[in-house]
Length: 300
Image (cartoon, rainbow, N blue to C red; front, side, top):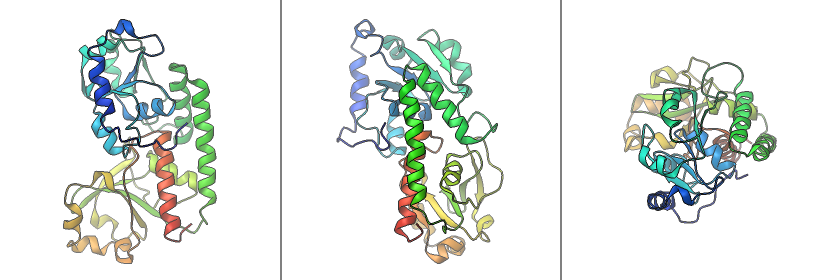
């Protein structure tokens, strides 16, 4: 299992691999070497963590941006835009499996013509029933069973639990409540709470999320800066979603400077190496980055 992928300078390997497939007949693939396809990044990163290769997916460059090039050396086939995959290429490569989240159920009939298709009913962002971690474990086991990687899935779950235990032991339990956010513009941001990957990680580490308000199925809600002015919490800013130039504009924003965490100068900024609707691999990377930041600031 890879808690953090290695960088080999192969930023465009996935694009090259996809082009190669366009001139290779599907008849040249064995059953185990034919790709597994998906149009969901959370499913994709789970497959990659289970050492499934190759994985066919959409919007690969954006995926690399969000995951900090963690998977730049992996065998990934670019099949176009997430919402508009290249069906001709998919048909040519004859994927051995196509895995869909519940929200893509409308694609099942079409995809089943291209390869053996399955919907992952335990997908963790399909609803609010049950706790996040049990859903994530069930999802990982389900994905592993579908691609013949059941032992690897169990190992991923076990090593993730061990990793979190080790990270939690590095915290002294005195960290203040946190607010995990992404800036949208000078006056609005996403704040993450219930149903989110980030909330689940905070709970697993014994940390408190200051946001107790409602959220959508992805675990966030859009709020104005003024709604956070009275919240005595430390900001954890996920940098990957920053609009271009917003840092400079915020430096002159009076309301931004009034936020308690900004006044104290204790905000944490994390470069995105994790997908916001990610699975266990993203959870591992976010937890590690957060604990390192807290420990470096004397909170752990």
